[in-house]
Image 1 (cartoon, rainbow, N blue to C red):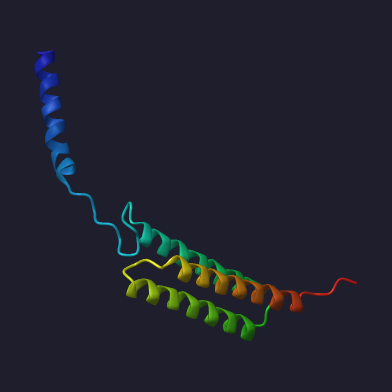
Image 2 (tube, rainbow, N blue to C red):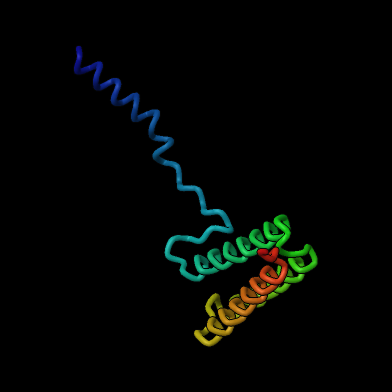
Length: 127
């Protein structure tokens, strides 16, 4: 009797679990890289970095370290740099050459220095 009850419970649980086990995994969202897709992963990382840079500049405006006009100008420059990198990456099959990568890195570093200089110029002077 116990064996029949245990067997019935096992069969019933399999019947309820079968639809769940048969489901195909949901496709990854369009903005999320597939596992092993290094170019897409690199793209996502770059996008997150530019988004964080924008957030930092907006916080600097809130704290009075940048004017809104300065932040808007710097954000526009960052977006242009990002868009150029994306366009170049798309036109070359998802990859940049080492030379192109170095060039964008240098331009991004120059932009960072520009942001730092603007914040330093607006920083309150210690007395």
